[in-house]
Length: 163
Image 1 (cartoon, helix red, strand yellow):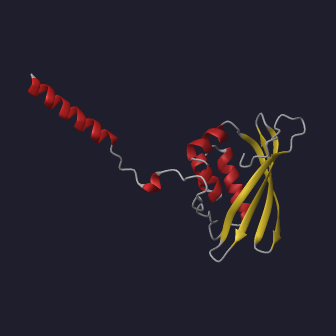
Image 2 (cartoon, helix red, strand yellow):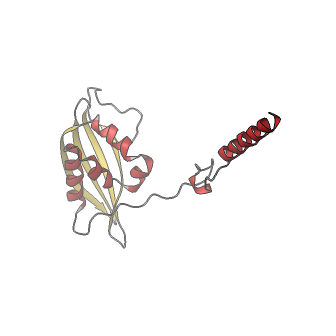
Image 3 (cartoon, one colour):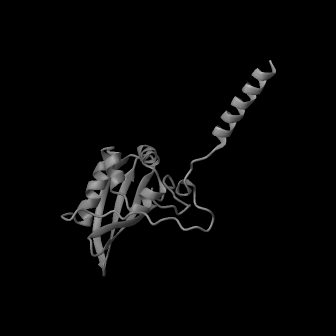
């Protein structure tokens, strides 16, 4: 009986030790406070696509609920800040009724374009997109959204972007 108890104790100890060991790589751990996050990969426009055409395609995918295609077109920083599942969930809850891609304004290598959206239940929104040209092509750099609805139905008092 003593021998059986010792064997059981040894087996349990080995199981506990094996369960407590960790093979987590340092790169799998979240960054420590003060550590810099790696820069998000840039999203380049296809060579034959203008920023205006890119936005028409993006918002058409969004309106048609083709969220995988739309997510791939997001600026790198937006993809890095949210998973596809988070993006899809948010955008499913904010279906667009219409969009209008405005005229572009250029300053050096930077192009800015404002898009007007009408979002079901949230009213009218303005989305300011920024594109930057570099040696490799045109990058979808960033965008920020703000409510254009004066009724308060779609107000965005937090000033957050990416809606």
